[in-house]
Amino acid sequence: MSINVQEQSGTYTRQVAALKTQTMVEIKFSVQDATEVVAVEPQISLSSCEVSSGRVNFGGRLVCTAVYTDGEGKLCRVQKGAEFSHYIDDDRLAPAQSGDCMLVCERCRLKRDGSAWVAVVIVSAEISVFDSASRNYLTGIDGAVCKTDGVKLLSMVNFSGESDVDDDFDCAAEDVLIPSAQALVLDCNVRAGVVEVNGEIYLTLLAVRDGSPVSLDRTVPFRCELTCDEALLSRRAFCRAEIKNMNVNCKVNEERGKCDVEFNATLGFAGRFYEEEEIPLVTDAFGRENEVVLAFAEECTRTDTDIKVYSERVSGLCAAKAKLDYTCAFLAAALPRAEYSRTHEGIEGSITATLLYEQAGEVHSTEVNMPFAVKLSGLSENCKTVSAAVCGMSMRQRAEGECEAEASLKITAADGESYTVKYVASATEGEPIKCSDSAVSVYIPAAGDGLWETAKRLSESPENIRSSNPDLNFPLTGKERILIYRPKQA
Image (cartoon, rainbow, N blue to C red; front, side, top):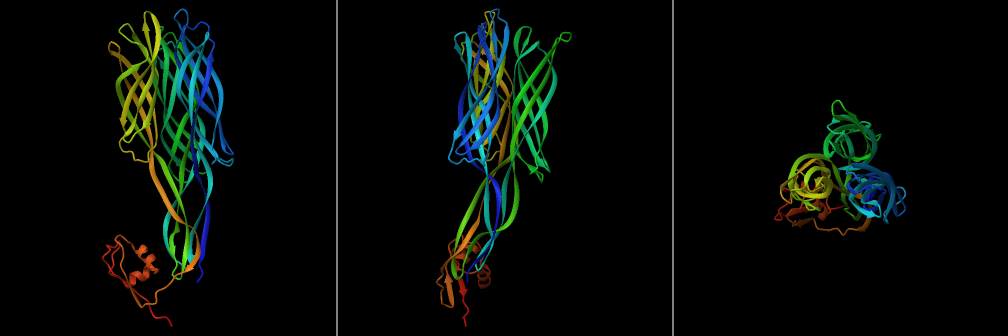
């Protein structure tokens, strides 16, 4: 008896590549009266990401804001931007694919070029490439004994969008020199037609108060709705946010001795969620008269859609590049950033900041680093995506030559589960099976065998095994004896 398969097909989105690279971008400041650059802050935003045959091209815009002291010791500000582009080659890339690129300023250092200053910024890029794939599966095979299970098939849905965030507040300062901000998504949910994103922007302002630099911190909450036509049912989603553009306008209120600050930021969002469909599929099969040659398909998906939020307070000694003693009066720990990596129990890394201090009546600065390690409870081994932002940092000189810092961290972790499904993609008829002509056969099973494994080894249906051996309990211990009765054929 020949077999006849019932086959169905569909399409889904999958990730085909995860790529990383670094590039160097230089910005030159032509400032004639600068005696020392005391702080520099790079802000980066993505402008394009296109996938072509064997290559992904991406570009962005880098804006550097520098604060320097002039010949009279006054703090001044200069800002300059530059466009850049780079690429990554990979044989898996094709024009029909789409890419999601995340840019991060890894390091920034200053160097002299004659009378000018040059900011050298190392930009890292992490690009996820997605493609549409087809899946073929069998729902039945006539002429064969089939094992059919309800299998949950997942299909990734990518979404993106932009939204503006505004905030007005007062700060006890005369002017804002450098704004620095980082956005974290604290919650993301899908409902019919939209994706709801909730999060916070952690804003740090290097400002001037009574002629001296100070560092001010503020948390700006946001809630955005992104249109998504593919969103149907309510479910959790993963999303990340980047600040594409940021404006800070200040107006001095002389009567109150404060500064009215108008903050506006354009946020870019990119994320994903998974549509689920449970279908009864053939996961295994065998023939009773002929061999059945099966081809299997396997899909492995990591559904990192559960966002967990942590708030931590870290402190410790700092390493400084400059020699500090009691003649140095600390003014501000400005522009803090967290650099970290995932560990088995949480994250560990260091917080880097620019320490502005006064010595001999002049303002100077140095880079300081404070190491930290944070244990994040409740995370599974599948959690790979962790983001952290510094919400505020303070420093003091505990002993001469020693700096001690304390900082607040907000941490988000995208947790989930790894889901693997294996099913039969195609089946063909093979060679005839040599059948036993004895009326009764005795089979000695292996320990741990289930009903399906036993039926497949004996080329009998599971129902026949049950009816012939009603006292069997599965899985087997290996001590059982299974009887197979074959009625005499006419």
